[in-house]
Every structure is written in structure tokens, then in C-alpha cells.
Length: 106
Image 1 (cartoon, rainbow, N blue to C red):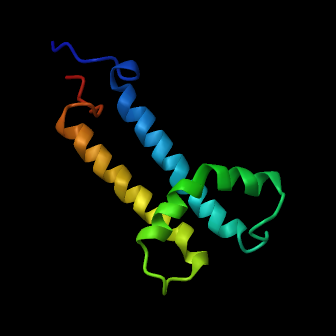
Image 2: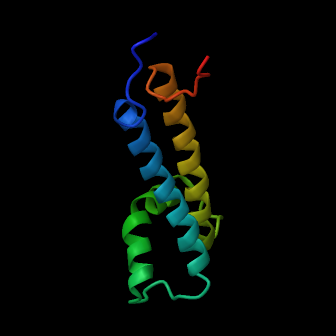
């Protein structure tokens, strides 16, 4: 029998990176959808929370996106880029053996 790491603690970098990147991506999508109902400078606490969590990736996406793309679409593009980054991180972690694998019991 092989000495495999614990499913949770042995792969903690994988779990943390996947969780954080997923949370940022889905918050970008929620920010986009909420943007139809709330003004950009709203004092709504949910809107402020979304902005706190996603401003860094939205600003980064705005910096690398052509100016012809409307500002409302930037959170959706950020959503896509974060999931691309998530896939890249998962592949890199897979290469170094830090991704949990399901194995047959027999």
C-alpha cells in the first residue's frame, strides 16, 4: 500500500487555491448581475462587499482589455480570466502531485 497524503490536509494548497479563485470568479459574476440593479457608487453593503472582493481583478482586467469593451462587461471577462487562471493553477498543481486523486479500493 502506498503512503498517500491525507485527503484534506495533504492537499491543502490545492483546496485553498481552488476555493479562493472560485469565490473570486463567482463574486465577479454576481457583481455583474447586481450591477443591473444597483448604481456603481451605491452604499449597499452587499455591493460594497462584492467590490472589495473583486476590485483588484476587475481593475486588472480593465487594464488588459481594449477600451472598446464596455465597462459593464469587465466583471464577466474577469470571471472568465479567473476560471482560466484556476485551470492553469490546477494543471500546475497536478504536475507536482498536489491534486487529490480518487483511486479504486481494490
